[in-house]
Amino acid sequence: MAAGKAGFGRRFPDGGGAGRSGRRAGARRRSVLAVLVLTLAALLTAPVAHAAPVLLSQGRPVTASSTESAAFPASAAVDGDSGTRWSSAFSDPQWLQVDLGSTQQLTQVVLSWEAAYAKAFTVQFSADANSWTTAYSTTTGTGGTQTLNVTGSGRYVRLTGTQRATQYGYSLWEFQVYGGGGTTQPGDVLLSYGKPGAASSYQDDGACPGCVPAKAFDHDPATRWATSATTGWVDPGWISVDLGARATVHQVVLQWDPAYAVAYQIQVSDDNANWTPIYSTTTGKGFKETLTVNGSGRYVRMYGTARSNGYGYSLWGFDVYGTGGNPTPPPPAPPAPHFPGTLVWSDEFNGAAGTPPDAGKWTAETGPGVNNELEYYTNNNNAKQDGHGNLVIQVRREATPGSACPPDPVSGSTTCQYTSGRINTAGKFSFTYGHVEANIKVSGTQGLWPAFWLLGANFFSGTPWPNCGEIDIMEHVGKSPNLAYSTIHAPAYNGAGGIGQPYDLGQDVSAGFHKFGLDWDANHMTFSVDGNAFETINRDTVESTRGPWVYDHPFFLILNNAIGGDFPGPPGAGTVLPQDMVVDYVRVYQ
Image (cartoon, rainbow, N blue to C red; front, top):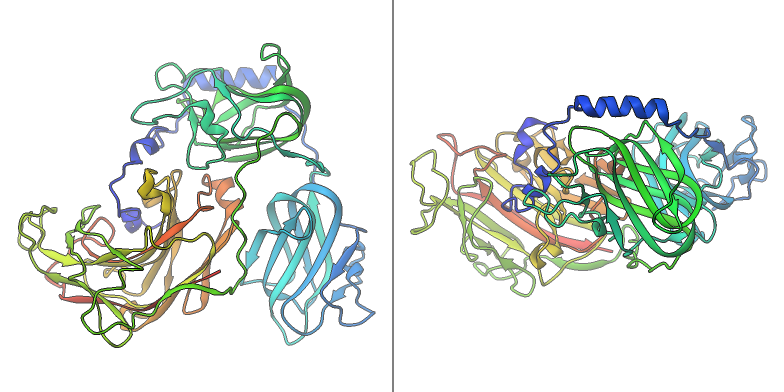
């Protein structure tokens, strides 16, 4: 990420920042002791061999939305013959679906396209052919042979094309699905949710408050267990769960914090005293590890023998799947959206000139900004409808007596020298998943920072930032006039480490109105400007490379127009005020 993005996540004082630093991300050198332990573990503990991915789809039953003719049947895509192919009707959308016969752990999908390929398509998994999980999505398909690395499980795998690259249909020589060959079995359920945990130690201090064993089993991706900072940065270190009754375990999913185990075992026990290893490795990679296992017991334990660095062990999640036990059903997942969806909420800002935004939809936030911003947010004195279907949020030079801000670089005063507006829908409207869009003409001058973004609705009920999650649909800074930024933030990646990228419009963003949009579901976020999708962030990629996905709960909307702060830098002699952020509409579809 660009160094300039260090200001991201700036809107609230970093109450969760202490928890972030608890894992001491800035120091990742493995200690000499850890290296010695790792070497010894490698000599004494034989790693479990992992089978190569298995081709699961060949010869399996397959269906399709259509076929061009009897000469190009759906079955030709899974017959193993690169000289035969499936071809669809010449329209959008079209799909091809294969039944693998049982739920499988899936790792790769290979598409061998004929010249009629998909520019935009998704690959989805399902256990029942009704409820689908998106494993891969693109709007920039290239055709040819595409090898897609995926993570997830399902009995059914479906390719859905939504935009053709030619005037013809969709055509595949081969549609190949690879996986572990039955590592997840029919009838398996999550056994560990809400179950009692125990550990060699745990952390509960300012750096990681309440990081007790139960946090690894609470199905909350923003909470974690960590070993004690005073006694737990040693080997071995362990965490266990009591499943409530004897169970047969087929899969364990570990979502590690950067303090992960390089060498560890997964063990089972009937009495919480005598343990049997069912998985062992000396090459643990951290982040998300989905482990195929086979064993029985009431208790399951991760037993770490070599740490990844000089600190301890920490897990955001420790999920155990199988049969038996005494499982507690986890909370149901939010319903999946259907794109483009139905309009469920909007504000067209059609009020009379000079009136504030609709109080039934928006609340004004008041007081000084954060992250070294220089404005004082007023009670809608700076946010007014213009009588022409727009909301105007204005930044102006205007001192607020009795207030306190960082020193103004122009006057040197620590009394807030600027006013602006910030409004949100907290407590009035929040939503999970869907398409959200706003048509905005941003302000644009040195030191300005307009934004359109989402924050987890649990923020105001006590969940600190960044645990609540943040989704920045649009941020613009005057020092980079052609760029609009879209970024996501969570406990494991925030501030300068947020995940995202800018979109270059090729001209000053503030020159006119632009539509800033987000498509959001359980497995991806796609950001767009004026209908051009420029960035897709996939859940599996995030979990396997950065940390937990914390976006499966309600979020509310925020509009604000800041000045100064860590990201845009200060105003100066070149700053022209007042400056307006003009919002034509905000709409949410589900």
